[in-house]
Image 1: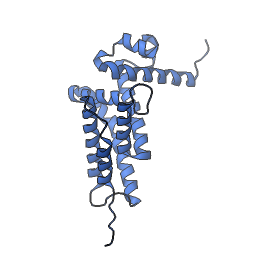
Image 2: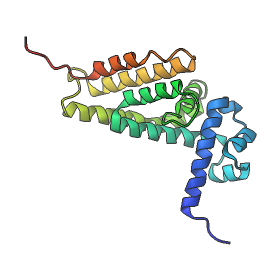
Image 3: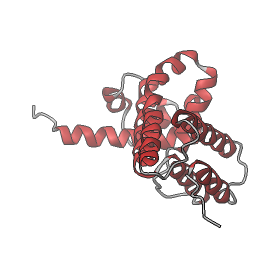
Image 4: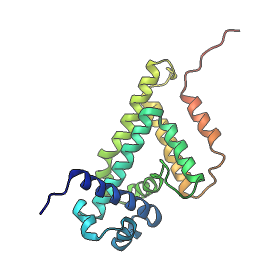
Length: 198
């Protein structure tokens, strides 16, 4: 029997994650039944669970994948850009978008509140986003672009709280069309203000 290439295995894993992402976003964790996961991924349960031990492992892998992608955006453009991507996704329904992680993020937030086991498993994975945010802020401070009167850890916490607030706002279905100026204000709040001489 010929061996399956690593490229094929990686492509199959990506297919499962992409299908599962839309399934979890549409139906939530509880509503994402095995049958719905099969439909969303166009694969059998055997193929899905060959790559992932169970639904919990699949969801954790998906959430970790999305957190990693968010951390990449943070490293390159900052946490406010992640928030802008979430808003763009919200206002352009349908079609693939870099911020298709919103559904997963909403489900992670819900499960963090209701599932202590998930909370403990997720804690180690969520540190990547915090670390990326802290590292970017530190680089911005060293470049002279970040206010220097507030500790980097405090600014990191501030931005993470704003992100969670935005996710809650979107989860409640509140209007998102007019939030760009709010994010401009958030960005301005962490920037270094250069004094102009009179």
